[in-house]
Amino acid sequence: MRRDRITEALEAMNVRYRTVMDTIRTVDQERRLWLEVARDLLDMLLPRRRDLYVRLGQWFSEGWWLMKVFRDVRPAMHRLRLRGYQLAVVSNWEPSLEEVLDHLGLRFYFTTVVISSVEGVWKPDPRLFEIALQRCGIQPEEAVSVGDDIERDLVAAARAGLAGILLDRFGDHPEYSPRVENLAELADRLPARRAAPR
Image 1 (cartoon, helix red, strand yellow):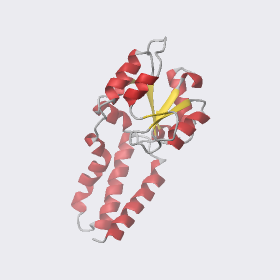
Image 2 (cartoon, helix red, strand yellow):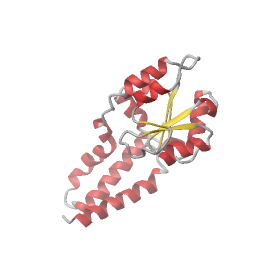
Image 3 (cartoon, helix red, strand yellow):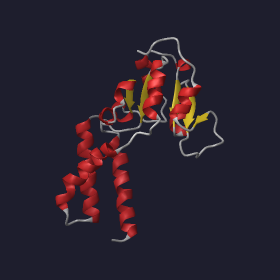
Image 4 (cartoon, one colour):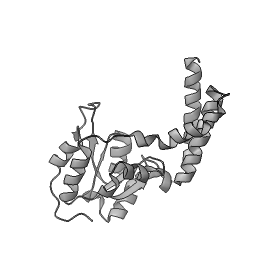
């Protein structure tokens, strides 16, 4: 199979994903989307292998089960919670994100999980951060956004009134400030808060 045909198929899949993703609000809808994406991709690349539809669709929708967590994540989140911080996730993700966090053993660290596909709002729209602030019951000046995408995680958060810190694990933005290379460094930098976590 020629490389340009594979590239063309993947680009078509991405277009379909971006077009339909705004309408996905539930995990069942998400799984149906991935089954359709798998069907379309297989029709383009392997038209005689329709028997693979379900397996490829399942891999697309549940491939996150293979994700691993960086070693610094759990200890840092534990430290931050003990020091009085509420933690929240604000993510451009599918509705299954809470399942992913549960599977990874991380969900219980978070006061709230704000998922773009569920809310119908995508970063860099600052409204996602406003939703998280409201659910946590705090003001923007009491919060900080930590993320790996300058535009989506930091600039958008600033528009909602939050401070931001770049998580730059791979050293892509050494000139950016403030930045941390891992969450252990973040936990070292942030001062303890007086209030206990909610």
